[in-house]
Image (cartoon, chains in turn blue, red, yellow, green):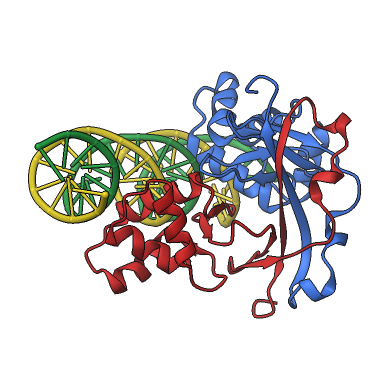
Length: 136
Length: 136
DNA sequence: TTGCTTGCAAAGCATTTGCAAGAGC
DNA sequence: GCTCTTGCAAATGCTTTGCAAGCAA
């Protein structure tokens, strides 16, 4: 947990209470919070924190590769604190819940060179969709 | 092409010039236009068409399963007219271009039951990311 | 001290919606 | 004619930004 704070400090991040709180919120369980949810949880500990700061901080953390942005169609982005452990996502089509999953095999390996069209591939992101037990 | 129009008529869709034009625009090559781009192209043929109508029509077509929505992080949704032919997407991380690709194997098969957490799976969507030849 | 960060409020997009006028069947 | 669809404009939801004041180093 303070791993994250350490890494950030090491990268020359100026440490502020706002940034610490955002990092701590993300550091919880394997949830995938929206920016607004992060703001709400952060505000429990630091009531004055602004939404803008939360957005900025999340954007920076994502740019640093410390967290990943998960885009879901028509909904607000969610942030995945688990960026250092490769995994994919299982999304409920009804309620939007996101869960980490670990498929077998490497999706990148499934794209033959002839289908790469000269792109320099960096990653393959898989989103499994369906209904969660509660919504089914 | 008029396949699409036929199917829609068959489903009880009231045919209007606006809807016809939107369907025709989507029916082009393998492009993946944003709602705004669809509106621009539709307006070339039917200048009075409104953005709202384009959005509504695209939403309906997507709900009917005739086109697919492609969500890209932080950018406007794109619409994929090729919904009846299974395929995945290759996205340029820099310019946002989207290309259809056909990986080997079935991504759904890569998620073992133990990793399905009680979800009723309906689809697996793979997004390959990288830099296109122009941006590399 | 110096310069990066914050908070506020306003701006910016993408998209949706309410409602009266208009068109399909 | 009845009903569904359109267009406008306003509203919405999410996110970014400009700028003065504040704080870390």
